[in-house]
Image 1 (cartoon, helix red, strand yellow):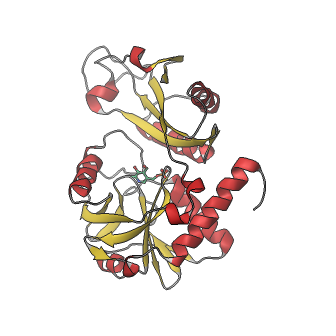
Image 2 (cartoon, rainbow, N blue to C red):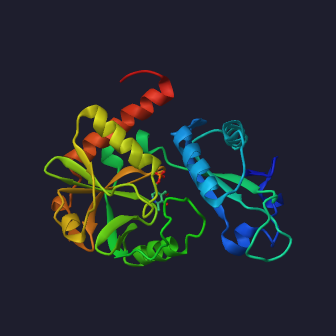
Image 3 (cartoon, helix red, strand yellow):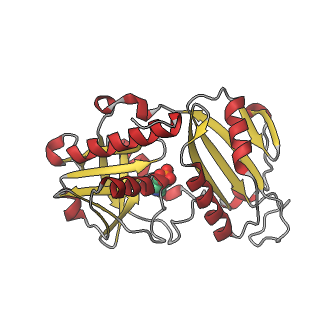
Length: 285
Ligand code: PLP
């Protein structure tokens, strides 16, 4: 495995970061996870836009040409279907102190992980998932893709220990999102999803779901959703970069939509597939 660290492409085993790096000490850092299919970044511009938002929210002054570096990293790792993990910390302060100096040099790290091409799988090969619902214990700047992921890790582990694949979080009676995904429900042919705010991450896949719905004339609303609406939904979906849009068949042990994948999910998955096909080939299907 070749990783990128502060301007160099090196074997993962040789990549070292200081114990005084603020990413390690304080989680003073942001990240992105970007899928590449056959070397081509999926929704790369949207990911880089969100990265600039996260960096500016932390006031990390870093202007960089990311695309070339990311593409080179993917090529050096074989160029197949890979997700790139990119993390930027405020840097190495040489000692532990909460306040920071403006002039710090950020640490930039990126590595690759193999991923399944979910668009090549075909709808029959996509399994529906189970979710649990649990309290959202996060801070109030969830729009920043920051590395302080302890609440997410705890709920995802809780989901796993209950035999579920994802945890949906709820705060003051309002559903926010999954531990690593955004939430959609379908009722009477309309798609509903929590509106963008500082309580959720603006998912790049969420944005694509809404773009594709708009183009296909499928009605949608961005609005508050509660637990009762979730259980009464015709369909529930989650979305994220590496999973595209997945059907949820069970919430807290109760079936959704009779426990089978819904028709609007199938339609949305096919719209995703077409979009992906066009990106890869420049052709219409
Ligand atoms: N919400 C959270 C908390 C996430 O961690 C993620 C990504 O993993 C998402 C939503 C989905 O974002 P995206 O579609 O850009 O991957």
